Amino acid sequence: MTQEQAFERDWFSMPGDTLLSLMERRNVSAHELAEGLVGGMDAVRGLLAGSCRIDARLAEELAFALGGSAEFWLRRQANFDESLARVVSMIYPNEGEEWLKRVPVPGSRAKGRLSEPQRRDEVRRRLVFFNVNSLQAWMRRYGSIRSETQFRTSPTLLSDDGAVSMWLRQGELEAALLPSKPWNAEGLRDRLGAIRSLSRIGHPTRFLPKLRDLLAEVGVALVAVRAPTGCRASGATRMISADKAMILMSFRHRADDHFWFTLFHEIGHLLLHGGQTFIDDEETFQDDPEREANEFARGCIVPAQRQSEFECLRPERKSVLRFSVSVGTAPGLIVGQMQHRKMIGHDRLNSLKRRWTWSELESVL
Image 1 (cartoon, one colour):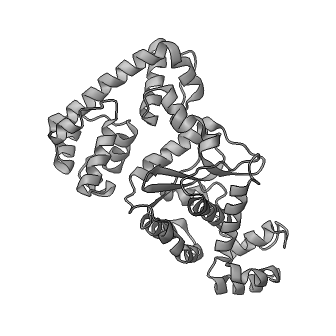
Image 2 (cartoon, one colour):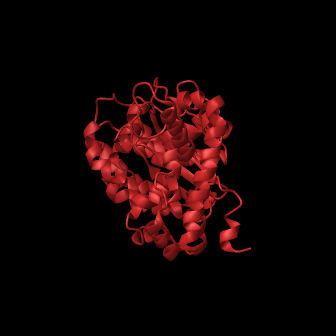
C-alpha cells in the first residue's frame, strides 16, 4: 500500500489530520512547515482548523515540505469536500437546528433570519471546526464538558458549556502544533522546582517559552488562549492523546498569583488523578479531587517543610520578599496565598503582585 493509498480510507478526516500525521512521521515542526508556506503559521493553523483550503499553490508547497504529490493533496481536499457535503445533506434536515442552537464557532455570528443555504453553511462550519461528522460525535467529545473536563472558574461565575467547548477546541488546535515527548508523570514531578523558579520571571513573553519547553519534555503541551465571551475558565487539563496532555490557560485575571496557582492546580490533576478529567466550578469546588489539587498547588508555591514558617510570616513587604527569595517563588504568589488563607486582607501587599494588560499578553495568546 502506498502512502497516498493509506490516507484514502476515511475521507471525512480533514486534510489537517494528514498534515499532522506526516509532520510527526517526518519530524517536521509547525514552524519548519510554516517557513515553506506562503501563508506561514496562519496557513498551518488554517489547515488544522479547516478554514484554509488546499489550492494548487498550497498543494505544491505541501508536496515539497511533507511528501506526496500535489495531485494527492488536491485530491485529499476534494474528497473531504465531497464527504463533508454528504454529511451536511444527511444531518441538516434532522439535526441542523440543534447544531445551530447548541454548537458555537469562532468568528462573527450571522445576524438576522438565515436562508437555507446560510444555515447549511453554518452547520458546515461547525462540523469542520470541531472535526466531527455528527452531533453525537460532538456530544461525546465536547457536549458533556461538565463531566469530562476539569477547568477552574471564578467563584460564583458559571461558564457556558458551548463557549467552553469552543475554547477547548482552540486549545487543542494550538496544542497540536507543539511537539512534545511522551507523557511522563515522574518527569513532571521532578521538574516542579524548576517550574516554580520560573514564577520569578516577570513577564509571560520571557517565562512562557521556558515553561513550555520544560513541560514538553514530559509530554505536556502548554497552551494559552484567551477565553471567548461566555467562558470564564482560567485553566483546563485534557489528555489529547494517549501520550500527550494539554494544559490550557486563559490568563483570565492577568495576575501572577492567579496564573501560577492555576497552573499548579492543573499539574496536580495530571499527577494525582491520571487520565481523569474534572470540572471545577461553584458546584464542585470542594469535592475531593479539587481539594487535592488545591492542596497540591499550595505545596508547589510554599514547600511542605516551609509551611510552619509561612504561617508565622509577618504581613509586611520586607518579610514577604525575604521569604519568597528563600523558597524560590515570586513574592506575588506568597501574597496571594496569604490573602487566600486570610492571613491578610485582599487589599494588602498587592503591589508585590505582577499584573499584565491584554495588550502586553497579545503576543502569547
